[in-house]
Amino acid sequence: MSRPKVGFFDFTSCEGCQIELTNFGDAAFLELLNHIDIVEFREAMSEKTDHLTIACIEGSFSREQDRARLEDIRKRSDIVISYGACASTGGINALKNHQDDYKKCVYGKDCNMPHLASQEARPISAAIKVDYQVHGCPMDKYEFLDIVSHLLHGKEPVVPTYPVCVECKRNETVCRYDDGDHCLGQVARAGCGAICPSHGIPCEACRGFVHDANEESLVQTLIEKAGFSKKRAQSKSRMFTANLRSDAQ
Image (cartoon, rainbow, N blue to C red; front, side):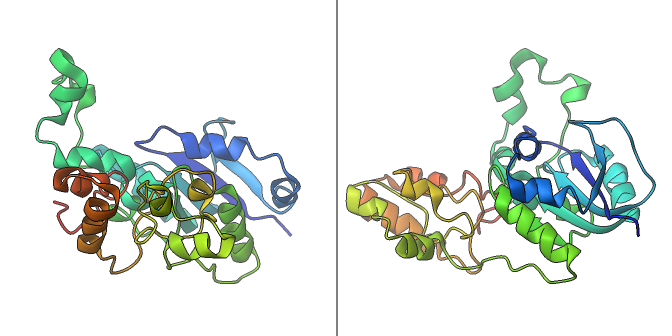
């Protein structure tokens, strides 16, 4: 019996999630390789195939000319997974959606060169149907393994929808606000194990927001508890969630 064929693709991104995949070296990933065939992966090989069981896509959709390539991937894949913040929500790339003259700001006098032309950064789901998402910047490799393992066993993956604060409580991690710091954990999607707060680093919501996130309360908390100005509080919660906020264009 042939093994499932898996391919990895990249669009507008730093390709950090693909690098995270190549950094896999533990027993769990090596065991996964015994059950799948990686048939397309630009970071590691040049081969291509006609049919994919699972296509994993990194990076945001920011150029209309990429739509045809995405549609081709969707057409020849049974399952499409967007992995990483850029592919799942637009990620940090979506900050440009709130910047009037981002090209000039970034590229200066070269801003009008044709190859730099792009549109608003959107998640891959803005162009094609996405079946599952692996959130995070970079994505959590163990969550990726868990989702793929569930699919290979014909089970529905379970992706957390509760906030990071729940994981901090489980880990008995001291709240960043109690240490005079800031944090977005009260509205950020869990699933990472609250790794940043456990190392004394504020959660930046790289996995996006929970459903029906109370953004107004978050801004007020950053002002009252962390001493942020209103402007800084409003922009702070936008870094990884520009396309998820109620003021997104």
